[in-house]
Image 1 (cartoon, rainbow, N blue to C red):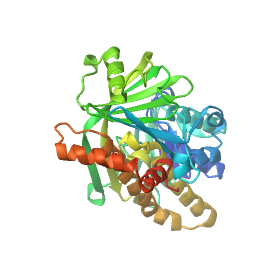
Image 2 (cartoon, helix red, strand yellow; image 1 turned 180 degrees about the vertical axis):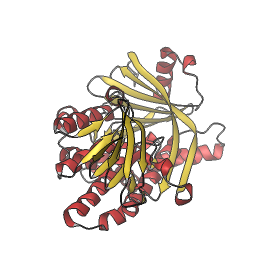
Image 3 (cartoon, rainbow, N blue to C red; image 1 turned 135 degrees about the vertical axis):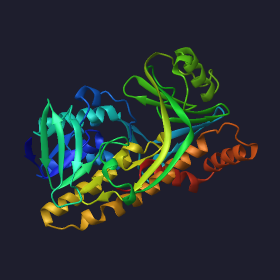
Image 4 (cartoon, one colour; image 1 turned 90 degrees about the vertical axis):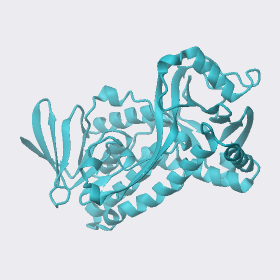
Length: 393
């Protein structure tokens, strides 16, 4: 077995792990990022792309915002469509000048990988049997295989940024975890298409047939979603049926035409809320989807991971530059405070916009009244805008 040494071992080359590696490197702190998938696989995963200001600032700090500045689309508002009747909320106005930027998570991943490798950072793709060890001691390590060679990576800390199904969280004893979870009775059928979106801002639609979301991937693609059953059979949803259903849930075709085009990808995304506490076990720290999942309705998954990384990178910096454990000791509490506020908002957005099968007439009227109140109250719109553009990191 070959033994290597670094300061922070990072498991997972998604946006969270990549961002942590970049921020640490910019501060002279060494890291190695281990990823079980290939680089091509990691760079082709289609994910969300609504960025809060905090995420944009982190990309700048990571020196990975060169394409974002050219291609990102600033959105100062968003639309709600209720059974075909559309209304716009001015995010910029109700959040005191803030906005969001639409830029695909796939592109962020590509940019972070390119920047990190170009700066001399180490990312090991195709790493097999990755396993964090001895993280309840002062001498943790990560063992893995690469090109059929066994390695041991000795480090001071381990960052588990390997997603909901990753190995990091699974190594923490069950007795030392508290898990909070909600599974929703619906999913999203999502498509990526070579077609312009029906609006230059996102449209959140609720309809008697269910929810729909109309988004975009600059400069010429659209990303759209339909509420569906978690066990939906994609074979029963040809392209024509998807386009027809998107149009139905948006409203009148004469007023809001959905432009059809070649569908490049389609898939079904389950919906859940999930949080594990605490986020630290000894010298192992969880961040991103390894620590929490939000339903995608509020566009918070990526941004919430980035706030984790802001806190975690600051904690490591404080340790190495100031010989202080204060940030490390407070990481879990600080991150969880923001996580739960974001979980609440994502749950609310999801609950108020999705129609539950066999929903009672009372529950449905309450849900629609909630939306009616939202669109008639400046206080409610301010609350939505504050959360949608992102709480401070």
